[in-house]
Amino acid sequence: MEIVDANIDGAESYASALDEVAREGKWLAINVGFSLEECVAFIRRCKETKSVELFLLDGDRVAGWCDVVPTRGIRTGSLGIGLRRQYRGKGHGAALLDAALIRAARRFDKVVLYVREDNDRAIKMYLRRGFVTKKIYSKGAYKNLPERVLMMVRKFSKKERQ
Image 1 (cartoon, one colour):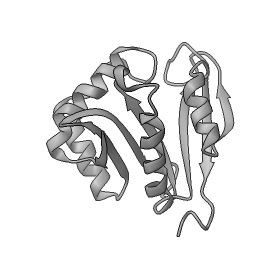
Image 2 (cartoon, rainbow, N blue to C red):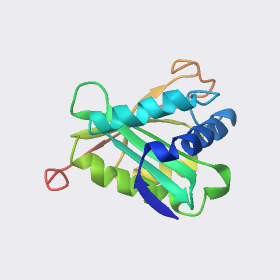
Image 3 (spheres, rainbow, N blue to C red):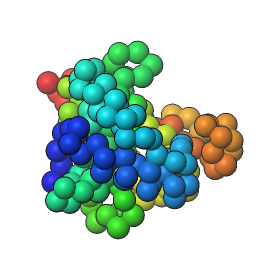
Image 4 (spheres, rainbow, N blue to C red):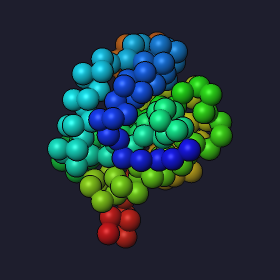
């Protein structure tokens, strides 16, 4: 397993991973992935904006991803993360998140993410890395998800930002 900066060569596998996780209908705010063209455009946009976009690779296969892109102003990043089912519960998500947070601290003052209230494993991982819950969206209030969703925020210290 290797964590690398996202690249166009991995776009097809990334699109496949995103679609696989989205179709589970549990973890993302979408229920179907994006097209290959949309994924290529996203990777390019991340490079252009100096955003964070990482792939977790198992050989040539994208096993997971983590991105932090600008939102709510230039100094706040929005974090997205996903892993194919067979790679969960093995520490890969934590490693991917840690690598993304190190890079994000150089670009952003804080990072925001949204997580389903019943995703205990992810919430514990975020809390261990300094995220705090800022808001709770009630059922259906966030992107039409049927479950309650937490907005969590991680602010970076000046030391982390150096």
